[in-house]
Length: 134
Ligand code: CO
Image 1 (cartoon, rainbow, N blue to C red):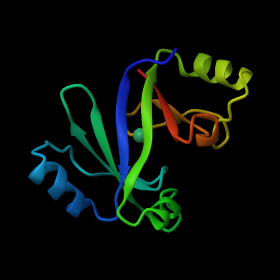
Image 2 (image 1 turned 60 degrees about the vertical axis):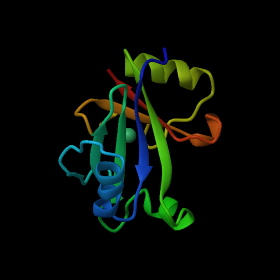
Image 3 (image 1 turned 30 degrees about the vertical axis):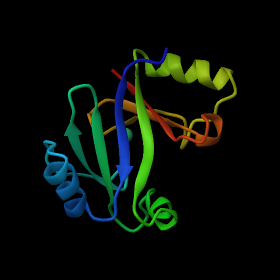
């Protein structure tokens, strides 16, 4: 079921400061900033030859990454995202194995316009894990 690594997401306090690191020091190429009000974040993707880095900045009052940034004052790795062929089949298999899906358990449209789900970090070795239908 688990497929390619789609991206690694890093939560940041300040997107412009983060872009200086990724595009300046590291020489990466950034996508445009996209506000994702449904997800409470602004995202930028850095395209790498074999995967992407997703930079996440809080958006709005109740951003789901605010608590994470309070615990991680320098920012940090927030989640990893794997591609799956069929997100409903993947979800149903994982639920049958006892894994918990965050939210209402239904896929939402993610930053790439494709259905995504988040899996509870306690069921996946302490790592918030996103599945995206490829
Ligand atoms: Co993501």
